[in-house]
Length: 129
Image 1 (cartoon, rainbow, N blue to C red):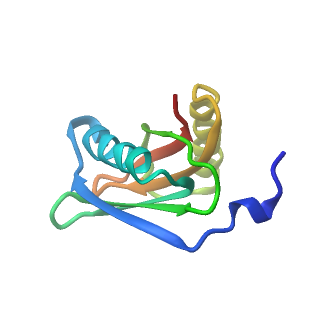
Image 2 (cartoon, rainbow, N blue to C red; image 1 turned 180 degrees about the vertical axis):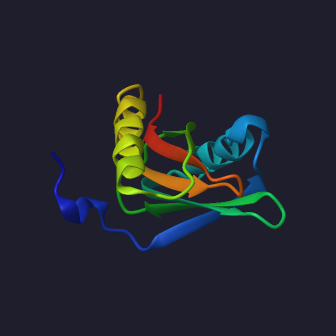
Image 3 (cartoon, helix red, strand yellow; image 1 turned 90 degrees about the vertical axis):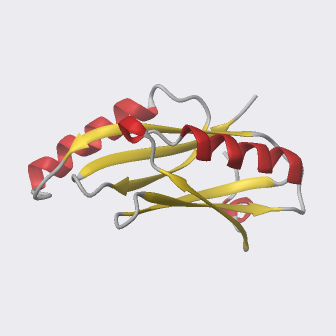
């Protein structure tokens, strides 16, 4: 396992785009992945926020530029609708998160965003090819 200090970073790149049909982020993901490759950086974190008013997403990539670069893959999984965030709903959501992560190889980090319809979407940043 890596040491925690290898994850420390203080540089960020922002991207924006529309949430696609089915809560997909494919266009935004491709843009961010291409930037990482071109900029030759080592990504460390991902953040994403859904702006309900205009259906836009703001995605951030935290990175370091003082170590070897590597490619990433961003993917999103719709975990379903959660209305009241009761204790049982959180436990069910955690199980869905674990099941979704089991299908993604080499996960670096993840983030959640919630749509105006209370759809929880999990975004993974994983090592790319």
